[in-house]
Length: 343
Image (cartoon, rainbow, N blue to C red; front, side, top):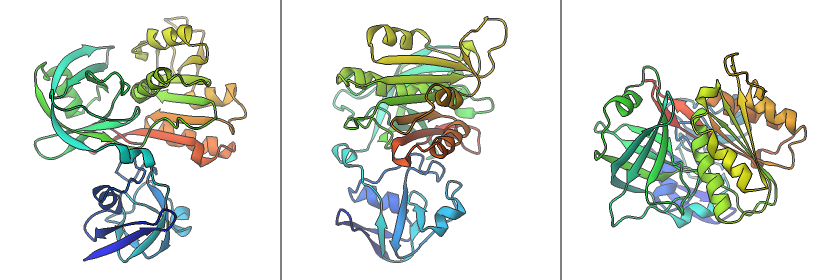
């Protein structure tokens, strides 16, 4: 049985069967709803139920009780139990691109630090991937499982697809990438995915906050902003544990020298004494709030570990930042301890 899902604000509608999520049905019908992790954690797909009811195989971790009580649902996990009317902002830009499944060849492997590998992928000559800076791709394994990683290059620089992959202790897939992946190997990917992207028309200045390899999608966004000549302040805060975890430290320094409206602040949570670090220390979101006590007039983009992203989002909202000005891409870990990414 199929149920009709209507969005009154745009007069768009589509049909969803009981065994598919509302997000899956929307994307298959060409209706571009916002989403990130597709795992019920990040909240990017949150919308309001105006009429009808939904069910979940299990209640998503990102759906708090007060959200449910207020009539909100996470459409990446919700299944229709009746015809629905929902309120959610569609992402008009996503209608410009098509999600593709395709082979990709490993063109180059470059270890950037003790635990970060840069992987360059080459697509078939007859395919040009159209994507937005900040989106991600999935590796599709032989058993059907997906592993998600941010695209680190900007759309104009698309000769290769660039990924920054951190080694995860106990993670079989990242162990494979570091130890056994070979140049020339053919992988199967699905891309582009996610709705984490630059809001180019916004007049507000930008704060970018990354944790670890959360720098990857922010790198793509920054390079895209420079490419289109975006003329507004951009301040990148990059939080890592120690100095050796800044795996591309010279690149944002170079940006700061070349672009007067760009600032870069690295933040170390455990600087130690060996490097005589004199820069910012502690949690990266606290460094942001200390430098900018009033954040209400900024657009804030956050990418990295869930604890960082979700904790920062809550504190920024407590400080009065409207939720619509917070954009996030949180890196998740599945039951096999693999690194995946959400937003």
